[in-house]
Length: 306
Ligand code: GLU
Image 1 (cartoon, rainbow, N blue to C red):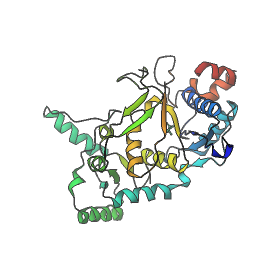
Image 2 (image 1 turned 180 degrees about the vertical axis):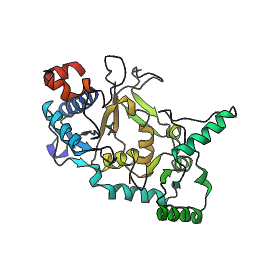
Image 3 (image 1 turned 90 degrees about the vertical axis):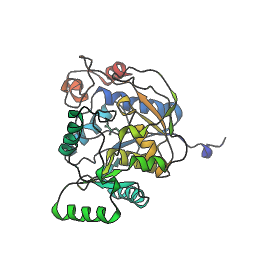
Image 4 (image 1 turned 45 degrees about the vertical axis):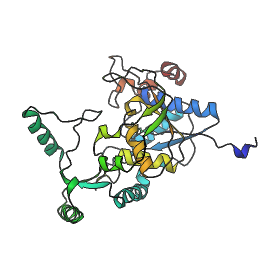
């Protein structure tokens, strides 16, 4: 077959520059690079810096340095999400036009109080796979006029609000089952032990309720920007940690609503700290820079995680 007919698979490593990379990130980056190498694929780097309050240029510089130290090279240019807010807005406008999002005004404290009142009365309130209570959504039934007035008032007074996906309406807007192809492993509930269940996974986005897609202070959410970017960048294979396994259901839903292709997903095991806990960006001892300074070589890091 002539070479021009070969469309290479596209992989991406997508860290957020809100802290230092640790061994878990090294595993993600190295796996992406390995798969790209083995399949003649492309390897992209995307900096997920929509959270302007937590992301900093010095973390971005450190990420680039750590990846170079690991011996990884990525295609230029690197996509920085904060340069593409207009793309996310276009996607949100599309969902608005279809009546699938609504402006939501309850604060976190108000959501907590709502749930506490129900639980105090002996009732239960559903929680998402990360343990956060689902959004009660009193605004779901408002008519257009009331929504527009509430947004105008919020904008005038600086009151915070969010655009949320109307999960029920979104689910209804889709024909047939929602699934994804998984080549990695699924976390078992409560732990992250791999079950090794690759294959077709049934997506249950409703487990997340009415997710946030945008806020005036953060014009895109993780879910919206990751979905748009994977499509814009032509990503065919998403390789990332199991902590994002369940979030994939939301991404598949958004891809379907926005008429975007579905990548294949590979969720890999999480690297544990010496105490068995999930690594975090604040755990200095497992940070790549700290390990480098302590004399570990890139080859040793590769051997440790792969
Ligand atoms: N930016 C996300 C993180 O650092 C990863 C997003 C993804 O790979 O889809 O956890």
